[in-house]
Image (cartoon, one colour):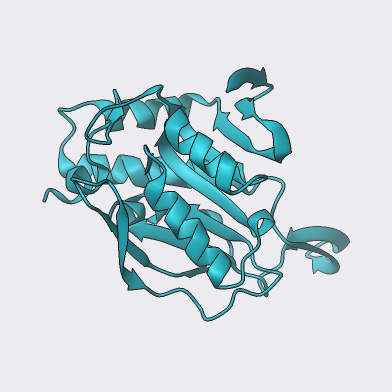
Length: 229
């Protein structure tokens, strides 16, 4: 995977349209540094995760929101304006538990959202995911824009299983964008192989995943650190 600077973002591009965007912004770097610090307390960690998620949602939807053009009346006269279409809410899908913290402030950026919770647990021995909660709609419409939020893309097993579930519920790859705090090449390679064309936005990229399936240096167990359990 080659990394190249692309204006305000670092982009890693592969064949088949697969793209990883790491936005270059001091606030994103700041919140990632707070998350990495082992001395960050649980409440501060959770808040930092939410702030990072807010910024990544902003970046991920820059060219992706459904908009409408209409004429309105200001106090001084008429104006033609472009605004986000509130009739097409953005679908937020956090992968529990840690995804809840990453998605916490998404609605403060987006004018209209719906949230569908997806609970997945990773077996510590096999590193394989299992689903314990599925609140996805029966079918996503073809107009849906879906933000799948998972803080850690390490081995890629959990996020790949989540994308499979979204597809089972009618979503196309072009309707999905993945938001993550930290991503590793192992997970990105799996996503690229299974879902050509999918797009990932991450706060940072680390190169190593250890034998226990944790990203190094990473930021530890995002769920445990977010909720203190």
